[in-house]
Image (cartoon, rainbow, N blue to C red):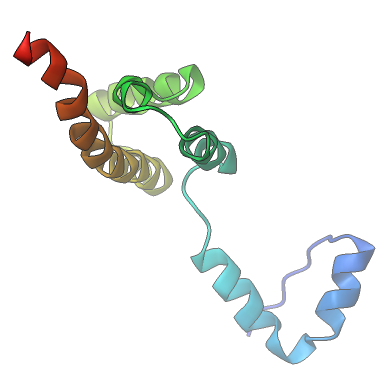
Length: 119
């Protein structure tokens, strides 16, 4: 076992002291749940979906400018040098999100395109 010293808030220290025998498990499980993306990325997407978007809005949905810039940087960097494990995980997560959005968009597109096809 290795000893690690960290600084935490007093309330958290109190809570942790109640579970001294499970610290290893608590920290380990927390690390396993870390997302490769900042929470604001998920909040952006969830806020959009929770807003009950129309089919047109779903079809036009795009990543935020901040997300687009980060994706551009990762893709550009990946062309010239290997990405770090964290960067690759981040890029993989953006790709996973894109694969979740594609079915939403494709199910919406027939509804959008149908009136123009009939005319």
